[in-house]
Amino acid sequence: MAMAVMGDLSVISSQVIGKNPGFDFKNGVFGSSVSPPRVHLSGGRKLKLKVKIGVQAVMQVGLEESKVLEGSLGFDVVSERELREKGFLGMRKTKLVCTIGPACCSLEDLEELALGGMNVARLNMCHNSREWHMDVIRKIKKLNEEKGFCVSVMIDTEGCQRVVDHGAPSSLKAEDGSIWFFTPENFEGSRPFTVQANFEGFSEGIKVGDGLVIDGGMATFEVVEKIGTDLRCKCTDPGLLLPRAKLSFWRDGKLVEENYELPTLSAKYRLTWGIRIHHPAYSKDQESSFLRASCLASMMSGDHLKDWADIGFGVSEGVDFIAMSFVKDADAVKHLKNYLSTKSSKSIKVLAKIESLESLQKLEEIVEASDGIMVARGDLGVEIPLEHIPTVQEKITTVCRQLNKPVIIASQLLESMIEYPTPTRAEVADVSEAVRQYADALMLSGESAIGSFGQKALSVLRMTSSRMEIWGREESRQRCLHHRQLGTSLADQIAEQICNCAVEMANNLGVDAIFVYTKHGQMASYLSRNRPNPPIFAFTNENSTRMALNLQWGVTPLLVDLSDDMEANIKETIDLAKAKGMVKQGDSVLVVSDVIPTRATPTVYQSIQVKTID
Ligand SMILES: Nc1ncnc2c1ncn2[C@@H]1O[C@H](COP(=O)(O)OP(=O)(O)OP(=O)(O)O)[C@@H](O)[C@H]1O
Ligand SMILES: CC(=O)C(=O)O
Image 1 (cartoon, helix red, strand yellow):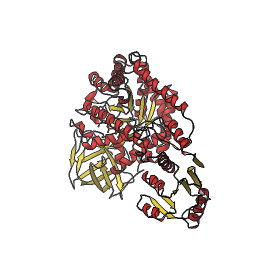
Image 2 (cartoon, rainbow, N blue to C red):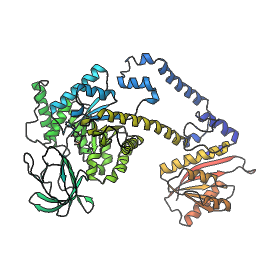
Image 3 (tube, rainbow, N blue to C red):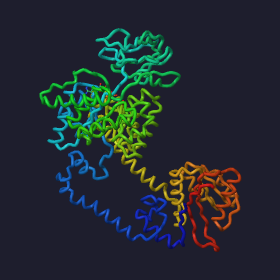
């Protein structure tokens, strides 16, 4: 593949002006990026006209604002207010999800959250009764209808959580060296130094010496004895045991996986009819429809009645999203989506929660199968070392962007605000990082559900994300500009832009090396400035250039004989590089060449070529 810019300088000059309407001659900067195809220069009149039309359209909205905002667009009151107050650019892009719990479930609380920018209300089906959830959903719908909000409802299935509970109402301290029993036995209340696991077979495959970690490191124990299905453990790292704590086993620094096989959707309450909802708002028909839905679904998927009943409830209540906990693979998501289409509820979007090693291993297929993703950092932090969370989050966010699926970053964003009215600096930095990664949404958990400062936490999310969005826009404009334009002559500016584009191409194509042919080293240094992934090999026939380039990041300068025939130079140096074993068959090289015009060759010839070594 080859792409070339050729011609005399006056032609190039007029063409660049036409192609780059954002070019600011006074300050010498471009307002938009110059991507490789744009380097093919052609007439610009038509383009200029197009830009003008775009500006006119924007102005029209401004002029007819009152008409537009009268409701014909179905504007919700919060967005409308935001537009009026802040203009188009001031509108927040990052969406906010709030977990609804006892601290924010009154009509007034919900209205305040909606006014504060809550886009989605999340109901965690692990907690509270279905009547309670129904009451919240109906309040939200009422607010939407009567007060003009647009708040979506998400239910989050319980899934097969691996939790342990000591049975006491508050947290217990595990002291260093204290001995505790972990048992799957189901008993009422609490027993001293005894912790109940909520699933059978929790100790299968576990060996003496394994580490038992609570809540990703809140407290750590060592298994000292197996007694039947119980584990006798010694506390090796003291800490708190909260009710419904998460549990994981570790051996030789690695998570012990697969010591038990858990389904994606919770099997809890299997074969019990305790799921029947008695509520005056439900007719007998509706009640039996939940049961039919859950029974049908449970037959289809193996008795995961609690979650299926919750899903049936969600369908009946017309929720907008179902977040599936502990998704293991794409099949689990497809299964639920198929079920929803049989219930004519295809419009309910299925969000897969990424919260286990297994789901990380099948990330792409899960993202592809689902309508969106939640990065459930709470449970994820139990299965992977905490220091891996930031990179894993970035990876999931990137995959979602690539596959065009929305992604929510969840858990502990502003954890300290459950108790305190201000967040820590580190929490604000975490929120900012999620926004910088262009996550679609941020989620509050305990901060809104049980915290004393839920409204304030929401406003911290709102203000931090708005601030970061503005900063991100400025930063991405900088990225578009690549760097401040350095070249003063047009020829230099073109050389600079070509190098910016070349590095972008080299990185995107994943080429093995960049070859540049340079007399004074300017092109090589422009390439280096962009810090490309592949190394830069700079071929020059000037020893001084070679020595000077020795200081440049990523540049290996090579002294060669260069003729006026650039194609011949490229061929000869590639042959030479091949003969010397510098490149081998199959390697790809991006070649940038720049020949300063001479009497013999008065035209500027600059090119980007991608060559595969044969
Ligand atoms: N509907 C509710 N009723 C009572 N308490 C709730 C409710 N929803 C949430 N909470 C409380 O808020 C806390 C945070 O809620 P959230 O659902 O985000 O956390 P979680 O239970 O750890 O989530 P998950 O179980 O999905 O990992 C919970 O520990 C629980 O104490
Ligand atoms: C939200 C959730 O389920 C988690 O972070 O584990």
